[in-house]
Amino acid sequence: MLVTGNEILLKAHQEGYGVGAFNFVNFEMLQAIFESANEANSPIIIQASEGAIKYMGIDMVVGMAKTMSKRYSHIPVALHLDHGTSVESCQKAIESGFTSVMIDASHHHFEENLELTTKVVQIAHKAGISVEAELGRLMGIEDNISVDEKDAVLVNPKEAEIFVKESKVDSLAPAIGTSHGAFKFKGEPKLDFKRLQEVKRLTHIPLVLHGASAIPDYVREAFLKTGGDLKGSKGVPFEFLKEAIKGGINKVNTDTDLRIAFIAEVRRVANEDKTQFDLRKFFTPGMEAIKKVIVERMHLLGSANKI
Ligand code: G3H
Ligand code: 13P
Ligand code: ZN
Image (cartoon, rainbow, N blue to C red; front, side, top):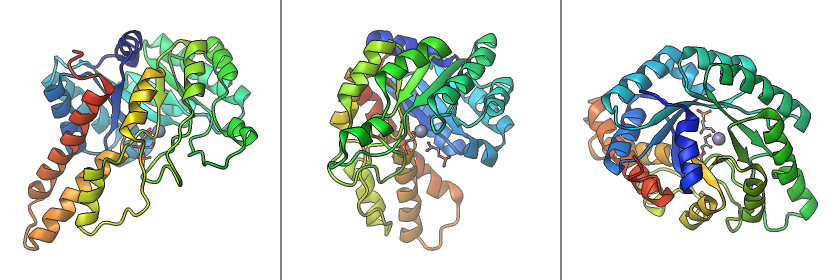
């Protein structure tokens, strides 16, 4: 059975570990996520973006999630809407069977973000569903950024305190210097852990790290070796992920790592056997590559053996 985001994240918050929130756009990614959770004995959050919902259809997203959660009934799993852009989008997800939603109004001014988030919280809480919101903008911080520029982009801890108190949101994604995709940092990776700790101290709720893909060396190498191009790519180092958990992060959003690992295997098979056209011969190793990344991540974040 699907459980709420709160059910998974409050335990992680109380016990001080992180749960991977993995995006999926098809059956193969979802299957790999569940098999990993089964292997590592870990709770999971499975998430679909609005783009993923458009691609699969919301009935298919919920149907697959429910079927898989029945197949692995011992695994606590929440189905989460990633980066919901409107109240309507969140409402539709709730009505369709999602157990957790994100309203991402972080590009709006504070007041408008607060207003939209509060609306979603009211609707969601009536239905017993958890809500995540975001404060600050997701972008890498560079070495030469001034204090003022940093303050303009990253989360303001005092605002976070007010935002959480007034909106009654269940979890918060504070911008601390990560960004989405494979090219997160131009120079040395840098995250504002002090700011993170301050947000945790003032809000005391589960916090979320977006743009948390690490792009482990073996994943990048596999992609490059088969003729892919990811020059200059840089993920969040493993030590930073650990530091983020210590600073209060409990939900760790990961999509890019899975995409790169999967496609590297698809391309390898395509290169090695030009006569191959059985889809399963491409996707089975792709799923195995995703599983390796996820199981490793679950141990790193501390969610392994938490069932
Ligand atoms: O945060 C973004 C996720 O990686 C989902 O990306 O909008 O391409 O599905 P997408
Ligand atoms: P990555 O692009 O680092 O995997 O981040 C995914 C994410 O934040 C989804 O919301
Ligand atoms: Zn994100």
